[in-house]
Length: 412
Image 1 (cartoon, helix red, strand yellow):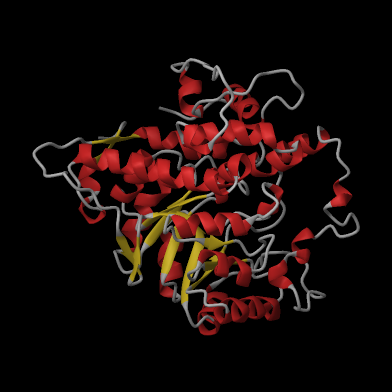
Image 2 (cartoon, one colour; image 1 turned 120 degrees about the horizontal axis):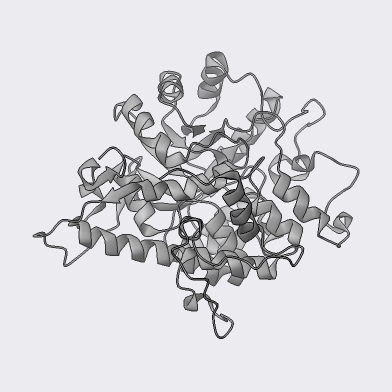
């Protein structure tokens, strides 16, 4: 199955962004099913009032759209250019089929796994999503509390709305700290020192944010938002990232952009020397770059295209996963995020070699829809669906999931 045409993308975008102009109704089901015309556009007879009434992760998107201001929903929905990579991230999972197996004891299913010697309750973790107070007044604190109740690992965005220390306290356990290093090395060192002092067990350098991005969906959403944005943002400060708590107390006068444009081997070596905890590189989509990162000291890599928010490559994260896994030769763990909406997506990523699977937009939808219960419900749904498909595949534990459990629909 090929990705959507530009025309189809426009239809899907209307669903993702909602009816900002009131012209086209929101599509409630998966982009893949809608693109194929196989799923009826049913509406709930009564409004969903509680998180535990939501049937699947995608349904949280519609509820979030109904509750958020247009610009805030546009911020989380946007991709770049035609948003085709956002859509491709999700529908690409349908290209992989799961081989159901019989004659195994699946009376008890365990989602437990271990990452860097630390026990994880589930391979599903909460990835970095910035500015979460745009979705809920308490922002990342609420997400951290949900992660705590579900024993889910959490990665905190470098441009989170709230300080790392408060989020770590709410989580009740160490978090991984994403790093936007800026183009000033002293700022990068300051963020690293603060994260390590707060107990972060890993620094996650994001390398897929080079230069400006053409977020047309966000721009359209802003045009349909009648609020005075100066109530929340300083109109005299175009670099809003400089206002984020993680940079508080650091000298930002020499920093002109959020990510450096000179990340090469020497830069990674310098970073490796500065980071005393685990170092992960996020935004890897090729085997060559995965091997390069590992050669320069990375303890792990995260296959990610930033949810399609930064570049219009039309390559889904899951399609990049096999070559990255092959390149690192099991020397370091590989993680994945991007387009994960079902427990079957998680299973496929694990079968293709991922050690853990991150979620981005789904946590924001749950947060916007119902706060802490919404984030908890998103995690519950994914873990429940993962448990179900593990039974059908004959895999009683995560470590039994392997490449023999998936086939590519076109290549077999």
